[in-house]
Image (cartoon, rainbow, N blue to C red; front, side, top):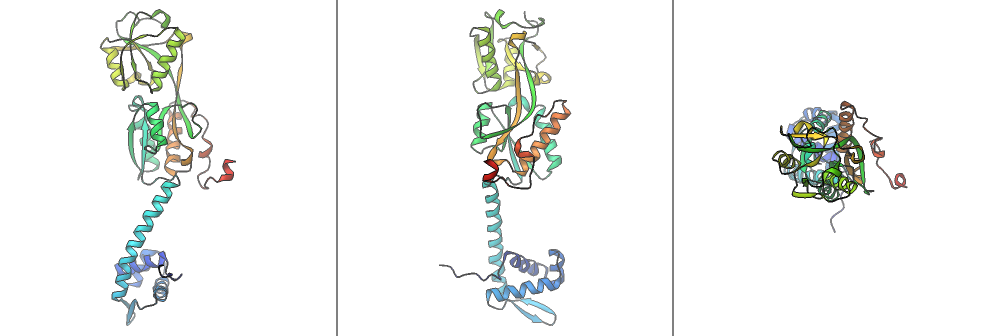
Length: 327
């Protein structure tokens, strides 16, 4: 069993010791620590009492560190470094991040929404480093739950009680076709009239894939899908190359190839996607995520979209959530 440590030996006094050894005088140490020379002197002598040996010898009005003080300083550096790492790990385990944030996103949000949000986040937390992870809706939700990303920009998930969301905007789904095709100049597309056409689609797991399947269930038939891809930009190029038609969200309009046009769907096929930022409820008091939420609300307002109701957790950032709060 290790020897008990005297209560006069504290982390603060070890910090005072290190600063005193680095600066070489009580006055300079006091200036760096934001205290008085008398307080530094008192802390050093209290530390001596706590370790029960002499750490300094007086020379006139000066304190000269002994070899024992330097040994203790070497240990103090390691102890303080270990404790700082431990506190950082503890905060992460409690749902508080450090100086970086990992943001998951759908591919379709990378040309407009993601840059705007990252710039808004950096204006609030300039020291924060952002990492982008791309994937489908299903991929991002899984990575969120596995802790691979801290937040995700995706289509609003269904049946996810462990996830908090903040609505960014709603997006209409359109019929996408090659410019000059038989459907390109129509005012609205009735999918019931497209049973003989070829289509291309995203793979399963993307929110746009789900809307594609939903639309053709409404049409009452399974379309002929000649190719599937896991990248919405590749999907647009397949349409432009004449491989087939597809359904695309309006948010990618500004990124469309020149040979692809979007046509509204007929009223009975019209649908919208809800795009949101999502994070785990266990991370609801993370300052980094609260800053991201603030950037999201500001971006939604700039777009002219009501940002939607705030998550319950974004209202207060000063007090941790307790078991009673969840009752």
